[in-house]
Structure formats: structure tokens, C-alpha cells
Image (cartoon, rainbow, N blue to C red; front, top):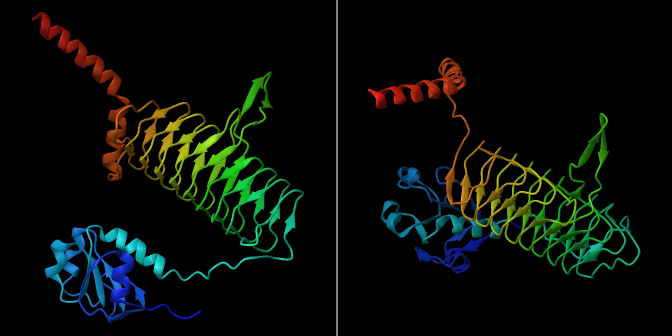
Length: 342
């Protein structure tokens, strides 16, 4: 595969940026601002790294207009340099393009049609009545269950499992090890035994959704689990049965969302956040890492609940005080009552 190379004029067009410098100067890669060399592009989106601008050896830097005077190198000026970096990574992506074709080892069930534009890898299993859109890419060892549908240009990477009755929209990516449509965790107790509740719903995933490696999205018990357009889900996330996630919400690694909860649009959920079942989250809510969400959140804004790191001796003292809060509150209430009578 030939190394990729672009002139600054070409990059300016692709990034929709204002070029300050030599339009014929050629860039062959991307690197961090401090490490970039003369043939590499770098970017700066955070003012904390402005001190690195003057000494950067990058061939071109993507930056805001206010910072253009702080470096003598070529510049691609944008209001949102981080967006420019994202577009740049697309240009320099080293993955080989998927070519249409079906590997001879693929197993295809009855009434499943594979478009000529699809790329189906080795040992893929497609169940019965599967619907594949145009230019779908399905990686090696992936299984797509009966009656499922995959939209145009969506890619399932290697070793993905899509159960029966799952719908995935267009232009999505599902990374390796993800499981879509497994049974929700439903059991009815009786006489010291658990009786399985069969999960009769499915999973409906919208367009432009990215699902990280080893993430699980369970099918609904009655009705579907729903992931709306533009949602981004990190690795190792657990989304339980009948959860609904609104448009353009981003969910970081190791988040767990319990059954029948609803998360609004344009939310961000940081790593290791836990959301209890049957909870409703408004649009525009942002949870910081390790927060425990045990009730409804009806107003947009940032919310936190995790205990911050502290030296062990200090943390132990605070943990003791935390257990004393109820008694301390009772004492304060008693003191306030006495002060009013005095």
C-alpha cells in the first residue's frame, strides 16, 4: 500500500481551512505537536499546549486564528481545530479499503440476499431472512441472526455477534466482540428458583452509530431496545433491555445502564457511570466519571457523585465521617430547634 501524501492546498480544501504557507508543501503523516517532524501535520485545540507551538517542528499546524502568530511554520486556520484533526485522520487512515466479494467459507441462510457491493469476510454466518444494504462490510467470524437487517455502508468488524430480529441503520460501525440482541437479564423468582422471562423484543439501532469492542446491547423483553441516530458508544459498555438512548449521546467505557431507562439527546456519560433501572435522563445532561444515577434527572447540566481520589489516611477519616452524617444531621436539627426556642 502506497504511503499517503497531500499538498497543503489539498489539505486546506479537505479540511475547509484557511491556509497560511506554501500550497505545494507536502505532508505524509500526522503526529503530536511536540513530536511532529517537517513532513507531518499537528494540531492544537487546547490552550494548555500553546507553549509547544514556538518549538514545534511540524510541517503544518492546525490551529485557531488567535494563535497563528505563535508559530512560524505553515498553518491551517480553523475555528474548530479538533474537527480539522478528525478530518485529517480520515485522510491518513491506513486501513485497506474493503473490496466487494463474498469469501467461499461464508454460510448464507434461506431468503438472504447479499448485494454485489457487499464485502463478506471469512467464516461469516448469515441467518435466514437477513437483509443487507449496499456496501455493507462484515468482518471474519461475524454472525448475523435470522431476520436481522444491516443498513447501507455499515461495517461489522471481525467477531461481532448480532442476534435475531436486530435492525442496524446506515453508516454505522460495530467493533469486534460486540454482542447486539442478547437476552435481557429477566427472571421471575418463585420458591427459591429463578424462572426465565423470554425476551420477545429486539434491538433497533439508528444511523451513524458507532459501538465499541466488547459492548453488549440486550434485546427488549417486550418492545425494542432503541439506540437513536448519531450515538457513540465506547468499549465494554452494558446497555440492558428496553433502554432508550437519544440522538448524538456519547457513552464512555464501562458504563452500565439498567433496564427500561431512558437517556436523552446530546448527553455525555463518562467512564464507569452506573444508571439504575427505570430512570429518565433529560436532554443535554453530562455525568462525570463513576457517578451513580439512582433517580430521574429532569434538568440539563453537569452532575457528579463519585468520591474523588485522596491520600488513604484522609480518605479513611472522611469515610468514617460519611457514616456519621445521619447522626450529625440529627444533632444539627436538634441544635436549631433549641436556638429557636431560646
